[in-house]
Length: 345
Ligand SMILES: [Zn+2]
Image 1: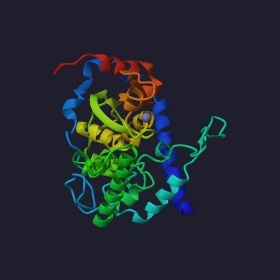
Image 2 (image 1 turned 30 degrees about the vertical axis):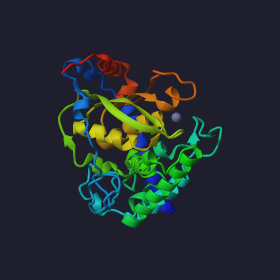
Image 3 (image 1 turned 90 degrees about the horizontal axis):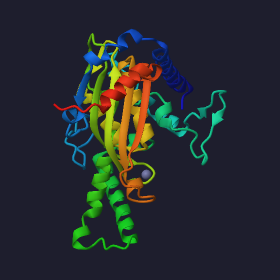
Image 4 (image 1 turned 60 degrees about the horizontal axis):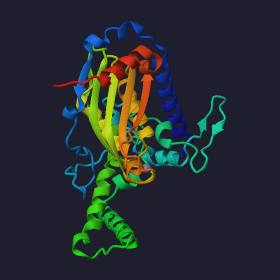
C-alpha cells in the first residue's frame, strides 16, 4: 500500500472524527425546545423501497438484479460537496484492500492498543476506516471488490462454487441432494445468499444518488419502523426487526426513502447488530454533516431464539447517538419519546 494513500485515508478519518467531536461540543440547546411542535415523524413502512435494485452493477446479475449498467468507481469522500468526483483515482482501489488487511488497532484512552480475546483481528475495519472510502463501496470486505469486478463468467463460476459447497452441507447433514424437492435447492440457496449479501455491491454514492438537498430546516427528522433483514456474521442466520433513524439537519436534508436505502445497504451484509447501527449513524453523519444523528435498532436474532438458549421473543436493542443526540439528554429524550409514541396515519 502506498504510504501517501494511507496518509490520505488517515487524514480523512481524522477529519471525520474531528467533525463528530465538533458536533458533540457545539451547543444547539436553543433549538431543542421546539422539537415537539415541529418534528417530522414518518412511518418507515411507507417510505421503504419494496425492492432495492442495485443502481450500479457491472453485469446482469444472476440473482435478480435487473441493472447491467456500466460500472464507474470514484472517490466519493466528498461527493455531496463536489460534482466532479467521478474523475478521481481509480488506482486507489487496491490500497483499500490493503487497508482492510491491516486495520488499525483500537486504542484505549492512554493510546495503548486494545486487543480482542481471540486476537485474530485488532479491530473492526468497518467502523474505523472512513465511512465513505476512496473505493466508493463504503466499508467493503476483502472479497467485495473482486465480487463487484467479476465478469459474467466469473460470476457464474462463483455461483457454481457456492452451489457445490451447499451440496456438501446438505449431504453431510444427511439429506439426498438428488431427490425431487432438493435437486435445485443448492442453486436457489446460492442465489438467495447472493441476494442477502447484495449490500457488498452497493456504494453510498449510488444509494444516495443526488438526494441530498439544501433546506433551511433544523428540526428533528425521524423515520421509524423501517424493516431490516440481515444475517448474523457468527451463525449466518437471519436477524430481523426495525430500525429507527433520526437526525437534526444542518441546512442539508436527505430524501427520506434514502434512509431506508442506506439501512438496506449495510443490512444486506454479514453483520452484528451493534456494527450495523453504528455504520448507519456514521454514514448519515458523514453524508449530511447534521447537528446530530440517532439510530436505534430492535431486532430478533434467529441464532438466539431458535438455537442455543432458545429465548423466544428476546429482542436486542442497540443505539448509536452522535452529535447533539449524544451531548444533549433533552434531544435524546425527545427522540426516544417520539419513537414510543403510537402514530396512526
Ligand atoms: Zn448469531
